[in-house]
Length: 64
Image (cartoon, rainbow, N blue to C red):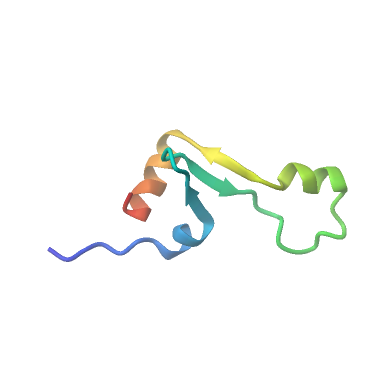
């Protein structure tokens, strides 16, 4: 049986931490940043953790 390919979009957007947690960046932080307030940009910065069914699906897409 052939090997399954990882999902390229998921691979580019998601990081798996050392302990296996799924870390995803917030959307709306790539462009048009001049019209967003500083507090909004600060709250959107950084990574958030995904858990439950979503994390299971992401791990399946990555082949982890």
